[in-house]
Amino acid sequence: MNAGEWLRRATLRLSESGDPDAACDAEWLLCEATGWARSSLRMRRNDVPDCGALAAADAWLERRCGGEPLQYVLGTADFMGLRFLCDARALIPRPETETLCELALFRLKGKGMPRALDLCCGTGAIGLSIAHFRPDARLLLTDVSDDALSLARENANRLNASNASFALGDLFAAAEGVFDLIACNPPYLDRTDMDELQPEVRREPALALFGGPDGLDFYRRIAKDAPRFLAPGGILLLEVGQGQAQAVGGMLADWADCVIHRDLFGVERVVEARKP
Image (tube, rainbow, N blue to C red):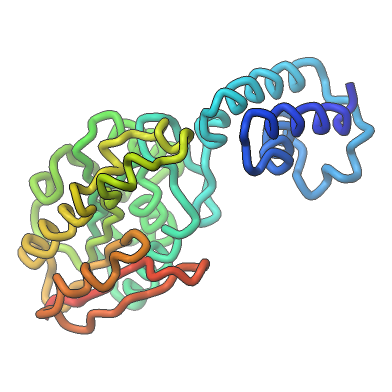
């Protein structure tokens, strides 16, 4: 079976399973199995992958047709140009979160040997990206989930992030000292959101998704406790769900320079504030 034939069959099966991105996902599966670049796929449709690659692609196809998220199937997710290990222990890193990460790196420009905290770190995508692009920085990554923290440590080893350390605990319970920057992508779905989740999102840990009845529980706690852990003039960056930015900004009304930033899709996605 050549690549084109496999892609046609896989796309049809994925479409029948309800995958809204069937053709794209089929290409990802085949390219990851073969090691081919997606940019070369059009020219290789008549090529015949070896039996091992086809067997791997077929096995992944079955899992994806069963509703497992593509990133969990492949075991990796790309974020900030880096590749992270990704599985059901933590939330899948998403492109919109890169807005927060880019802002963090921008705010740390010119600051020598900064100290930064990644709360609710999950895979470690935010904190480890900062650690990668700012090797002089000292990062602390925390999470209440031991499973998520284990995955973040694996990603730190993968990225050789020797400037990152880890602590298990609920928000600031795991933090010590003060930081120049605190970044957090907390759980922010409300009860209605949880009831209406897409089937594949239900495969992600609920602990990383549910933010209380109105989705804002974690923001209230962070707004209350963060000042004790920020150096004077330190920056707080919070990712928020769609429609939450104004409410979260209101919680930081007595902070300095409170700004709302939009993501690459134009959604109000990050609330930034500076400790007075």
